[in-house]
Length: 270
Image 1: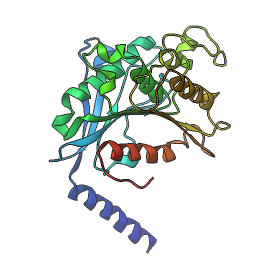
Image 2 (image 1 turned 180 degrees about the vertical axis):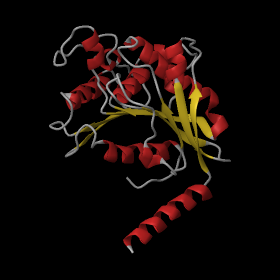
Image 3 (image 1 turned 60 degrees about the horizontal axis):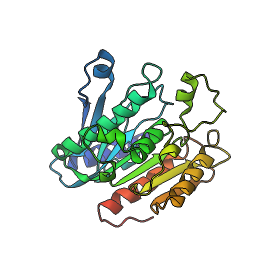
């Protein structure tokens, strides 16, 4: 009986997905770079509802310490009336960190130029990601030069929502430069180095300060404080008590969905 119920539930989910005409297109190249590694790596997946239009968009950067990981979607937002874009980028130590950040910027620029083909609205884009993806999200939000390279304004993004992002110089970048994991540095590749007053909403999500990676909560809290001191009023910080670095994804998805509904002008139960 239990197996029959499970099969029935699975069929119901499949029927719902077909009824709403959700579709995924994988491995779309987004780069103008011509080297072999870029051609292999710089691709994205788009999840969308066919025949829809004016949909909010979530661009999602995967985690993995900037050295590993594969493109993915924030699965809790599937079938939630938004377009999802999962992005791959080049990994350290195969490239230097500036190349990786540039890849992230090029992907967002591609989305701005092309997402209408998938029913998305380029004025309703949220950039987000977990861990390393959160770091990339922060860098695009705070250092406008990266998107400017592609003729785009970082302020045209509706909101940036990093999940457990690193606010100091990323630990993998520090390791490549012979700096110990517990030796914090803040340089041009640290989000904290680029605090600015006119940043769009920056929603910082972190796990429990006692369960997170080394000082991750404190880094984000300091970033929020410095943003406030320079006059930014739209930087928010959420700490998810009882959740570690990966466990914080679940409550984080709820906040992400709330912002998707907010920029789409639709109510959502907080």
